[in-house]
Structures are given as C-alpha cells and as structure tokens.
Length: 261
Image (cartoon, rainbow, N blue to C red; front, side, top):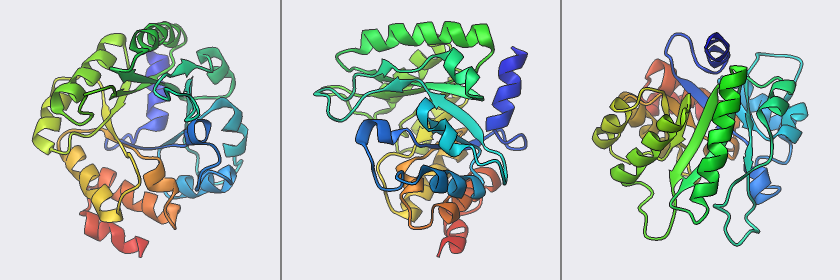
C-alpha cells in the first residue's frame, strides 16, 4: 500500500532503513513521572537529538507540535492501562485509527501482552485495528511482549512467539524484548518479514543500554523503541544523539557516548 510506504518513510531513516523511536506514553500508565512533566521540552530535546519518531497518546499530541526546528515522526498510541489496575497488563483501546489520522499521525501503535489473562481480548482488538489500518493506509507498530505467570519475558522461544503473532496479525513494525543474545535474536529477526525493534526497558546505565542496542542492530534489528532510557537521562538530547550514532552510523558505544559526558 503506497499510503503505508509513504508514512513509514517519515519514521524510518531512508539510508539505513532503521529508526530510533522514543515512546512517551508512560504517563497514561504511571502518572506524572520524571521526564514527562514538561512534555513540550522533552519532545523538543529528543527531536533535536535526532530521534526519528515519538509515540504519544492523543491528548498529548498538541504539546508536541513545536512549529519550529526539525520535524519528527508521530506515532499515536491506541492502547492504554494504568498501574492502579490490579492487572496493568490488561490493555484496552483508548483511541481509533481515524482519530489518529485527524491528529496528523504517521503511524499508530497498539500493545499486546501474550500470556496475560486478557490476551484473547487484546488479540481480538488488534485484529480490528489491523483492518482499519489497512483501510486507511496507516502503518501499525505492534508492541508485543511475553507477560504472564511462569513466562520468561526474554527467552528466545517466547520472544519469537510474540514476533510471529504480530507478523501474522498484520503488523508493519514490531517492538518486543531483546533476548540478550545476538545469535538468538538474529534467528528471530531472520524469520520475520517486517522490521523488528527492541524495547528500551527499565532505565539502565548509558553504556549498558547502547551495547544492547548495538548488538541487536548487528543481529538484524531495525533499531530501538526507547522511552525511560532516553527521556529520563540528565541530558536526553545528548543521549538520543548517541543512540542515533549507534543505530544509524554503527558507531561503537564508547565512542558514541563521548558527546554525552
């Protein structure tokens, strides 16, 4: 679909075919957390740092429209849950594809937790979103994770299962956990026909984060969707610059971090 192709070009680097995406949907789940209290400032910092796209809920889009500086791709997140819910893994749809189009989105995203008690409902809602995305030529990023009792969220078998489910549903882009091992992750990526991104996860050390991203990219990953590991840094712009150097220029993490110090 030409509509999807045009929009995907706005959120991917044309030269590398990769992307640095900064999700900022955490406020819906966690409240007024560090790094996301002044959304306009944070969005400006990651944009100026070179991020290819950001992920926002519909009500925050207006705070990210800067009217100046470099442009940045907009992905509107359609799923939501809060940490106050006894089961925060129960994601429901809180926005539609048509609403996202009206907001100027370049893509939309949904969240699925395989193994969670309400997995079937999330899969059913995902199928509806896929149908609407195909109707409107809107790219769909599926954020999918293995989450449930007794499930190893980083095991190659469970991560690979997530990737396959997302692909079979009709995802255009997939975000999931990194297995922690380039060899096993390479097999997962090789078996998938659409770009696979790794999640940034909980905030970790600068070098630790960049090494994992470097290894995932070398294994064939399409880049990273990194939230707290970007916007909660002391200098988000500088760290995003380092992320972009690792993902797009394949710079060694230590070298990339020199500009962050």
